[in-house]
Length: 162
Image 1 (cartoon, rainbow, N blue to C red):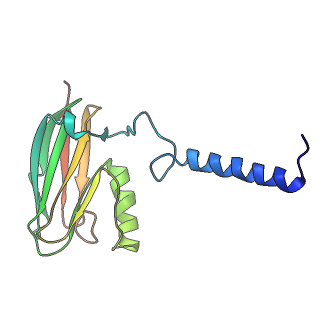
Image 2: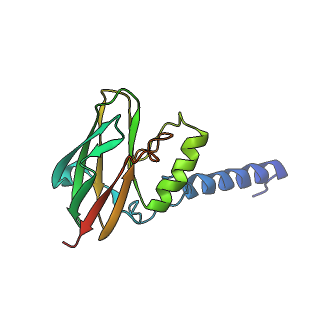
Image 3: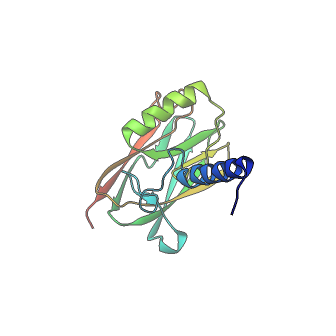
C-alpha cells in the first residue's frame, strides 16, 4: 500500500494529538494517580459517604468548626455555607499546596475553581465537597481569597487510624 507524504504527515499528527489528549489525565498536572489519589486523599463518591459535616464560613475570617477529626478511609460530605457578605472558599490541601495556590489567587483573585477539593461560594450560597481520607495525618483547609488566609481563615482535619 502506497502512502503519500501528506497522508503520512496527517497520520503522524493524529497519533501525536491522541497522545497529548490521553497524557492530559484529569487534572492540571496531567496523568491520573490511582483513582485521583493525592497526599490528602481522593474525591469521594456520594454512595460511600460515612457522615456529613457542616462547615460555616463568615466574614470574621473563621471556619466553624476549624478543627475536624475523621478516620482514615472515611468518606465525608462537607456541606459548606457562606454566611458572610463577601465571597469565601474552602480548599483542602497540604500546607505547601495551599500556599502555592494562595500566591496564584493573589495574582488572579477572580479565579474560578473546578477541582473536587475546592468550593468557592458567594454570600449566602451553600456547596459541598465529598472527600475520602486515605492517609492518616493532617489535612489543611483554608480560604485563599486575597487577605482571608492571612487573617486566619484556615483549619485542620486530623485523620486518625481506622
